[in-house]
Amino acid sequence: MEAHTCVVQALTWLALIALFHYLTTTLGRHRLRRHKQKYPPGPKPWPIIGNLNLVGSVPHQSFHCLSQKYGEIMQLKFGSFPIVVVSSPEMAKEILQTHDQTFASRPALAAGKYTSYNYSDMAWAPNGPHWRLARRLYLNELFSTKRIDSYEYIRVEERHALMSRLYALSGRETVIREELTRFTLTNVSRMALGEKYFSESESDRSSSRVKLEELKEMVDEWFLLGGVFNIGDWIPWLSFLDLQGYVKRMKALHKKFDRFLDHVIADHKAKREANKDNFVAKDMVDVVLQLADDPNLEVKLNSDGVKGLLQDPILGGTDTSAITVEWAISELLKQPRLLRKATEELDRVIGRDRWVEEDDIQNLPYICAIAKETMRFHPVGTLLAPHLSTEDCKIADYDIRKGTTVFVNTWSIGRDPRYWEASEKFLPERFLGKNIDVTGHHFELLPFGSGRRMCPGYRLGLMLIHSTLANLLHGFSWKLPDNVKPEDVEMEEEFGLTTHRKIPIVVVVEPRLSAHLYV
Image (cartoon, rainbow, N blue to C red; front, side, top):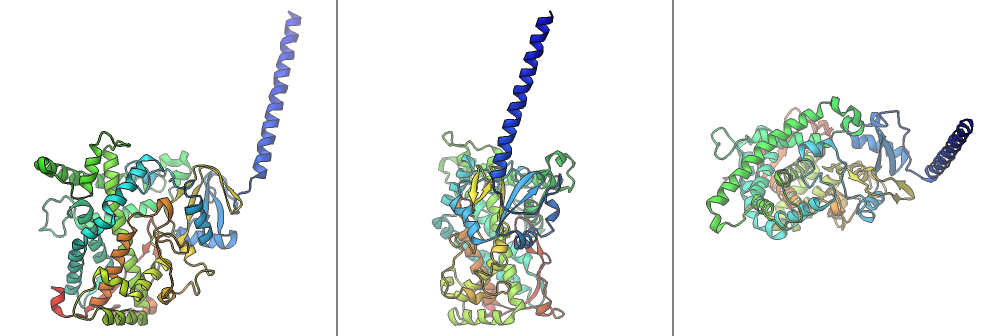
């Protein structure tokens, strides 16, 4: 018995020694490996919260200030999650082009789960079969050159309706954002959904379950919640508390969009059933519903998948152009000489007896320069939607770990003095005679992103921005209310997935053209 006890004790000690040796050797190698890794510089994180305390109410400006200290690529911690922020054209190119495949996915944030049908839209879907299907659908159907051209009559009709409404408001103080959002929302709804599906007045309630004002509020809320830094995303064990109340708002918004899209889908199904023998897909909804019925489709589309695909065009097409045009008008009212220069070009090229057509834009270089300068100085996506690394890689000799969330700060890039002379001034002239475009090839100007995750609707977005801005400046004289001077115009920002003016600008317009053109 005693010998047996000794053997057991000896074996126990040997096992403990082996375990100790294994642990010390493994941990030593781990420490050595960690020691050899070189991460981007950044502020020291606090326990539990990491660097969340450094994110202010306007995050892109907070990141810009930090980049002045830590450089064009820096690493932070949100909770225990690694975050990388890039703030230069060179670093943006590394993320969006050189290592495009590595960073083509999205982090699984609450916004994507609750407001985008469990990551079923193209904005929040991870890189994979569903996202590829969505992109192919948008590029081949809604945003193809042929399809965009076929919808020109819609854009002309809605643009004329906008000019007529502003004509009726002549001489009165007007919140131009309200009119721009109505215009873009109506445009995109008709192009993507086949009709408006919202009521514009109390007497207009046909085939609609939502009022225009409510739908505009839903769009605004979606973009706001899409850009928030939700504590539960970065400190998961606190997520059940919903400390900021964001998840509650996301769930409420989801219900509203669900009701709206249910009505749109039911209406299209009824029309298809009524004409099933001779049915031809006429819009995005018809195409998506046909795909959902296709048994050979690579990715089976369930109800969430269908709604996610239909939600994106409404949201993306509405916000981007309306926000950009409002920023442009704001800058022109701060510098009346720029406004005069724009109208001189319009009078010279177009004359006073017609409206600006889409084909005219190529002959209006100063209008295009104003649009580009607005997209540089006031990018709608000040932080491009976050990217997620799906494998370890190196950027500028720094180690980027798998699972790192990456933000591209286009606001900071647009103020890089190495690329932009007098970068803090609004100067459209900087683009005259320069071959700098916004299609993702010039990384100093990325309003629509670049690479696989670039906005597929950028052509339509540019078309709406150029033609809307040109006709607004051509059709009306613009001024501020009597008690506001140009230098007093506030330019404070409100951050979200898109960044717009915190306080909508109020304007007074007067017609410049013959009265019959507004009727």
